[in-house]
Image (tube, rainbow, N blue to C red):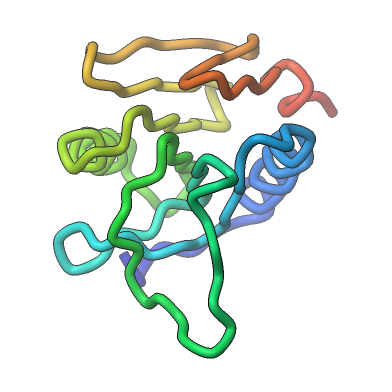
Length: 140
């Protein structure tokens, strides 16, 4: 996915998401972490239970073996929504419990999980005990 070019909207939404997510002390929020799925998939944000992440600064991990409980993707204008939904389904099949795919133009959040897909608009979304108020994300 190296051809994708994150935009201002993409970066802004990721920053706003991180601001809300970092308030939850039970989780570890990791941006741009490559997962050991296929040739390596890198969600915009991966979320793990805090006690499962133990970095070793003498030996790095290039591809995370353990899937996150939640992966978040923000669609940039250079990305295709269908491709991103397919990526979400692949992540779920690979053990990620939930994937949020955020489409900024429609202010939509597609939630993919083992129980199927749901669609939200500018509202509170919760998966795996992790909650984000998207009305605050899309405020100007």
